[in-house]
Image 1 (tube, rainbow, N blue to C red):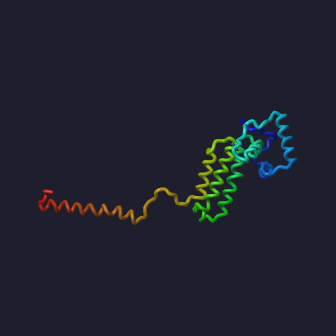
Image 2: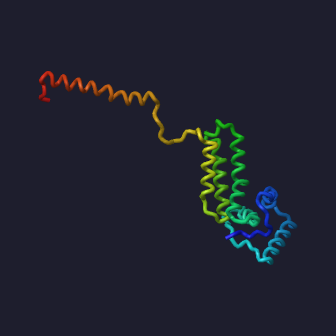
Image 3: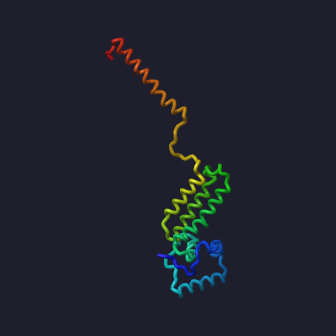
Length: 191
């Protein structure tokens, strides 16, 4: 099912920033009136927002209004995801020193905001979350910003511990063999 497209505008040629500013700025009476006229004209031409819109979040109506200009909800979601969630997250991460990326206290707020943003837009556009695109982007983010961060998974012990654990049985085997030989050589095989 495709979203209505009143004017065939490709997402690359359309000024997305203008669209976002239109969708998220407070509307004056004239803007509201123009918006109603626009939607009335769409309905007269047989175009409606037919796909529905979530209402769990405050910005849902704005997100859905923006999606009218895209061929599919998925295309709209990808664009909103990139502009509204991904770019601010990357900008925030790049503003930190890369040695601070592994400190969870420095990254936690941005990471949680990014996660909530992706979920909010998906909920508003009635797209399942998490989805393949979000999962791929999270993998890309982790490989870009957190590749050298220690995780809490099990890791190899230090070499000195490994050496002690390996050498102890190696040294004990010859000692045990000598004890067995001495015990049998003395003829004391009773025990």
